[in-house]
Length: 87
Image (cartoon, rainbow, N blue to C red; front, top):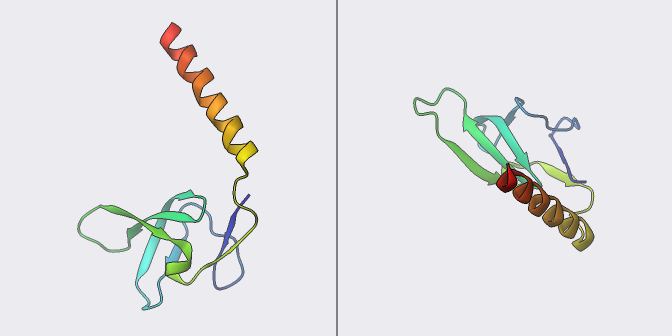
């Protein structure tokens, strides 16, 4: 599992405020691996954007998904798809 670590050493969670290298603040809306979906704090438009954690100056820890993990997720998605199609 991948963890994204803020500059203060705390793990980044949904709803946290993070700053980029220039000091612009973003609210974390979603975390997908090493990618964050963020919303600019104080922005007039409510548009999220995807950024790599490292591009915001954050660090990452942990392993990426293995092929076995991806295979299990694919099988789970197919099972769920079949379940919903049968309903």
